[in-house]
Image 1 (tube, rainbow, N blue to C red):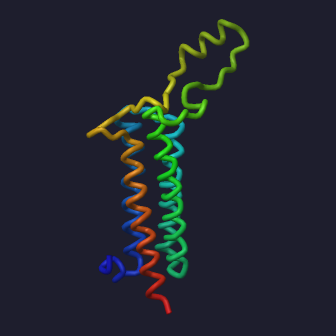
Image 2 (cartoon, rainbow, N blue to C red):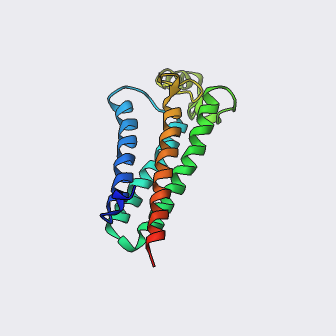
Image 3 (tube, rainbow, N blue to C red):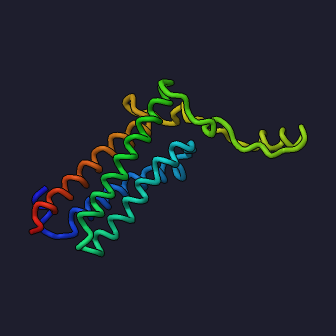
Length: 164
């Protein structure tokens, strides 16, 4: 971790690279792998997108670097909670939100409702679309969020200790 502090932007660049990798993997699994995300999957992407923006700002604005690393760590800590909830929904520990199993129904007639339902793909939050080594994508997101949040927090502490 000390080597990361040799260049002032390398810590934020590492967090940026990891965040781009995780967000990119999620987008690739959707657009290239055909895995449709549920609403909780989308919610888990937002902290990564925010972290990307924060780390770009941290690279561009050196005097705000420590605060931006702290904000990134906080955003990813929130994501740990979202991912934990999603894993709990997948394992039937928690009830998922109503939006996980249904779409918006707008048909005024029975025929219109049938047409809408026939064309709608329902993506459930409690049924993982992908599992590898016993972990769903939400489980991997939980681990990645915790790891990168720790890295960002540790880098922020190192910066704090270096400033007079």
